Length: 196
Image (cartoon, rainbow, N blue to C red):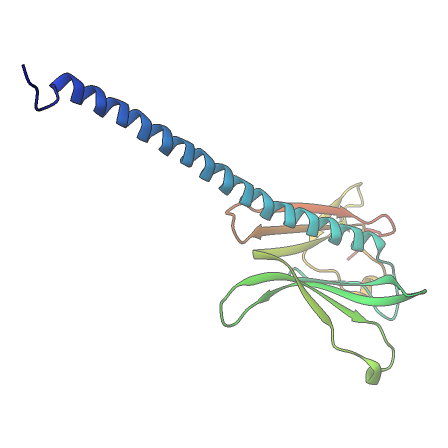
């Protein structure tokens, strides 16, 4: 007897084998894409972590300087920093603040570095560098409790009139690619809690 076609059983078996192969290939690609996305998200958070470590190092290295006082608001922080260059130490005024691109609407935490000079004619333009993209950022500063007990409370500003640097700065931020708000508290060894 001569056969011109496949039997129903042969077609069902071939279809099942093809379905298993397609599902296996899809699963392999799906797992690969998920791993790639997780790696990219982790890489973005790693950049934020490294930037925060740099901010922490700079704040801990800041010092009280009467001609360029530590100033802080909820949206920016300004402090003096001594940076070795060539064979001498130079004093720079460091500013961290949020900057918004007027064309795209993108927001970045920006670091500005300006050489301190007492002569306004010698002042050069600040060097700006983006730190990481953010949706929001807020700085808070440690103040003594009003009742005189141990501990401190967070305030939104640190005026120049404090004549010191804060003992702690709290940075709250929301990265551009996340819905979570993160907090980083930086303790400054040479600082003191603010008073009102």
